[in-house]
Image (cartoon, rainbow, N blue to C red):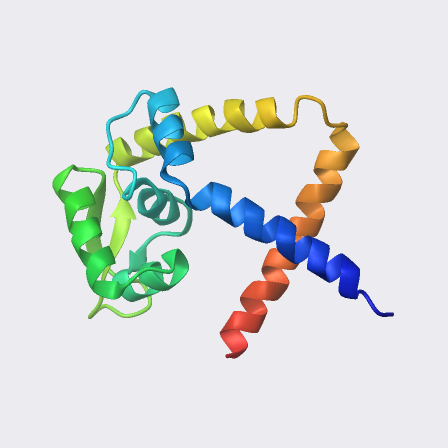
Length: 152
């Protein structure tokens, strides 16, 4: 089945969504709504460490799509703020992995609560079944995309 138009429409929607997510204003609004003080460049790293940690710097850089040296500096900043700590990696004891601290977990909970309110507002006029279907299909697409990237 040829899906050229559908794929083009999906690609355009994803490009628009990526553009929104990559703007600094949504991150700044989320941080303000959460009532926390954190450089907006640091919070996506903190969230990934909290969700998937412990993470080595190389793996975190790949997940974040950022340069290793930049992520290394940013994790050092998170560590100096007491939001993450370093520990031996469970997979390779020679690698020091980042793990979220209790203070970091409290901050991600505040950010999650603020994100929940913002997203609930975006979906206020949607049917629950539409949100469920979007979630299911996005998860499927993200999983397939991750598998494709791993195969490269």
